[in-house]
Length: 476
Image (tube, rainbow, N blue to C red; front, top):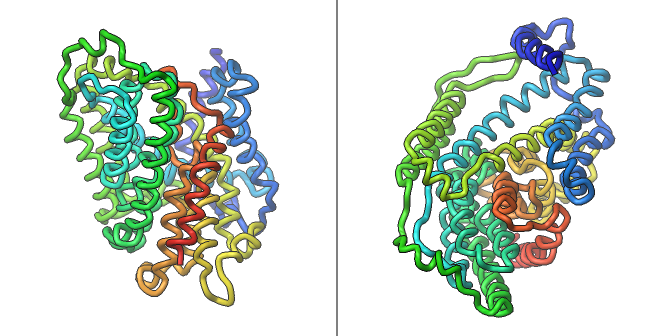
């Protein structure tokens, strides 16, 4: 153990020095050449996904105690061969770039939202009837576009679980919550979901998505909420219309909110994100990765807001809210492995028609014209397994990358890309970060959630037919 700690300390001390070394002598081009990569390079990423899907079922105790190590292993399963084949500088650059540009901002934002939303407690004896549950899903769906899918999901999942704690059948409620609040509800503004925020940074106007995706969201929202209400009614009657425990009904708590200061802090999180997308405060470079001052300032503000939330919120309030750190720790560990192992898959995708996925990329155009239903499905399917933000950017650029053109003559193409990236993040647990967090919180509170493949059965039976209808009705 002592030797491990010494090695870790040595790595921490040496890494900053390595990052300051010039690229000379390490290789001129530090970017992974996506056009030269075969599909074999995506094996560590596939194995990472299979580990998440299979290990909790086959070796649950081993997985529970070692999933962080497994995530690191699959990340190294790409980085080590990359260093051997393309040179250590390429591997170091790609890892550093993924950490600084993607993973660290991603985790800091999730951490801030998780901490702040976890300090808000809905008081009162809400009872999980079909009408109440449907109402919570509706409110969460409407909030998601304005406070982010993560913010809305973290704010409402605990009250929803408490309201249904006396119910025998709870899984369907959490699954529909993931569909609607953690994904589909975030389609109306750049605040709702990271892909739309990237589009905003590329020049897509703030309210463009409302005008183009609102009809799709209303259609999906009404369809899914209606289906949920019918399903929950069925289970509610099957359970004999259960009443909450007597102590819950007699608690005497009035309906209200505790930890209201966190609502102001939540507004601060949203403001910090918007600031980073609109301000231009300059940039600097660390080991050939550009870091903008506004992004660094945003991350520091978010960490400060999280610290304020912890200081200003009564610890008893968090205890009553069943708050603990396990969900964010699980997401942090697993997504480290996902972000590292998916580097070559994204590089191949960015190579376009010069890469191993050229046959896939070529499907989005025919005789020079965009095939919008293919943009919708390819963006969506790939977003279900890869990070939906870079996937959105790949197809945004494949469609020309000119925001003015995409909002004008190619508006239907941009709508298809945007809808695919946001909606189909609901297809898997890893399609969007709040999916995994909602699953983890639910399991911590005693709900036996479906496995990775089990969740895909739910999304396959419920969401895919809805997306087929979206294709025929809205994708032009």
